[in-house]
Image (tube, rainbow, N blue to C red; front, top):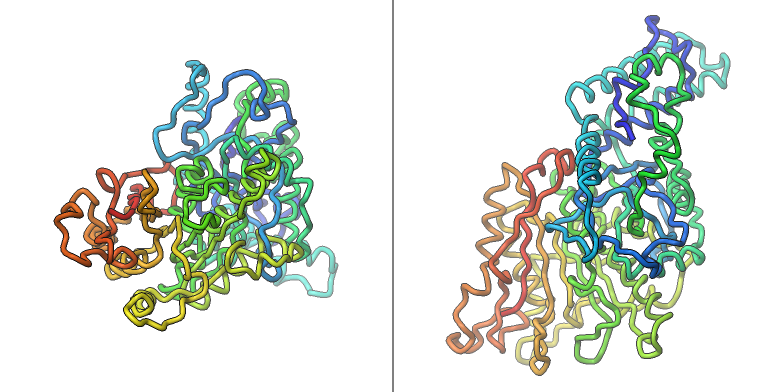
Length: 576
């Protein structure tokens, strides 16, 4: 499929600065919608609805014969933007729309092909070409062309409104005002997310094939959320039908676009029969949709009201390989057999918490239809924490967007299951916990902190050199210790992911300083009594990075925020 390029599809604007004729306002709004999707500040992992097509039920995921790859080569992933919709009060995790097949995924590690599958040279060449084509609109010339076109639309709309009486041709005035508003928002968006105001991000995360059946089953249980915006309703509805996003409609209508647009393209490059398109489609993974509300940043401290690339990159890996992160409701490693407990520090828009909750819900649904021994499993607990009131307020909006308020059950008020939001002050929490565990301590545990967590997540949380030390002190009191009589149990895992920003070298160095490798510590027998930290004091256990240390991960060209193009460091921390 040919790339959507501004120089090819945007029509010429009239020379007169006070009219759009012969262009109609609806046509201009359609073009602006495409530009908003193309140039929404891209971050890793999101896939728009135009990148998905419905699984008709006969895929290999349902057990059919024939090899299929477990992972895909990394691809550019576009994001779809919609209006900011707000849900109601927090609720039990809601069902997830049905199975989807994806045109591309973004992985982290070198991805392996399943045994028996051999990618042909033709497929490799096709993927390489798709990868190159998918970045063409990011060329500075193309972006500049789009921005100047929007400026031209803005000037003409503004001039028209100023020269016409507000009471004259009311319908026409509303249409032009809509164009003016859309062009203004698109120009602000291209200047940066903060300038664009609030927006709702629509993301899709490919999941492990074991969860495909649960995704399909959950679609029939979907309940409508009346508080969602029309754009978000359209996005969710599209997950169970052929793609209908403006980008997809643009691709499908290339051959029938207005003559003024057609002149700008070479027909030989932009025509493709539906039969050819269908034959080139290959089966893709089912995917989980996540809705996130990005609010404008009020100051330099409120970075948590927006979504950053680190969280989506880590979330993509978690969705594809949930067992690697302990996201398995059927595995009960903790003493007492309770469900898995997950804590997100500096949650921001709560992407990782929301995604974890949805993955656990799918696993619980899968277990409920499995062997009798696996049917009675705890759904687990997910706690998203942050500190600033503005961030927590926006976090509540994000949770409400993903879990319909109509799904109100007792689990939403339980401290042992569901998804919850809590305020956590890194500066005071460690001292509070130390007093609680001291001899004769009478401190009551903070809500949700009465037991440790199997999985702790911190994505792009270190933006000051003092934050890494705080993270270590907090993690020491919340990460589950290894069970002493359980062979092979390493305890909980703490994942830290941080981008390689050119101006953040001291912050990255601070993480290395406060999280050395476990191999750098002396053996337990050589440590002094009470030589551990946090929950591990009595057992001389300390936190450190597992294996050889941090791992370097990178996205594809054109992905990530403008200051995240160098890649990311990933630390996997545990007890030792």
